[in-house]
Length: 378
Image (cartoon, rainbow, N blue to C red; front, top):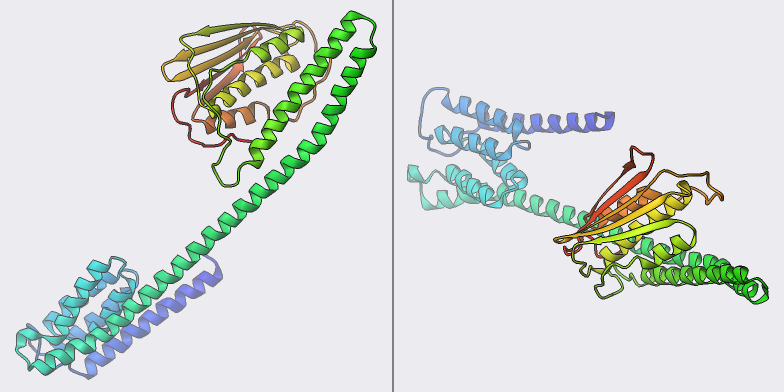
């Protein structure tokens, strides 16, 4: 406990001791009403005052229990601790029904109607006891209002932060689009120029493939930026129809790059939601990219297995047969980012090496179930 918290706790306990001492002093000095309680005897008045006053030490930490005990002691012989207990019950008991019931019991104990006092004495006793009880209820209401305002302010700060984050995300997406699109566009133009000027057929064919790959990259980049900019509120997403997973372009690109890829579809293919479809597409894309980076010369087996409301994607490659010809760079999100993407759509991802030196990636996605997120993770 910090020194400040310890000091505040000590001051709070000191105040409770002061309140208890005042209640005991009033009880010892003044008799409450002209009639005794349910019992009467020598020193019973003083004993009730001391016991009821001591019970007030716990009036904030256990307001209901303390109030019940004070009420029981005051039934034996009424004491001024009733007034302090009525305030504590109104101020610190969270359950309003229990608080009002106990307040009614404390007020009745103060008025002592069973001793047949004059009606004016009953009304006067109840009025005096109601004043601290109503004050306690007022304090509790103000405290709840203050807490509600603090919670509302916290929610407003969170919403403001979320709005700033979304705006910053859109700004970064725009900058990314401007910078990367410019560079990729130059690559596409240069590939087109090379295709026009080249004399050899194989060079022209390679340049055309580079140009098509660049165009596809530009198309995907523009789609990603458009989706990011469309999120005007949390959870919004660009509407798209359900479609059957199609990875033929990824397979064709890998084969054109010299990777042997076989695709097997098991079960009856069915349409998936756009979010699930994008996640499944990225799973195959990331797996093939890792093969290009880390397993040159490997044979790749892609299996799409539709089982009930799930689609199981297995990408398995054999051991590499040679060292990488070109370093494609590192530092991306890789499998960690892919795992987060899969988990966001309530799927699972398992990866690991194979005994023969290859590698396997297995993703299970809820093809027919509703995902836990409404937008594609960026």
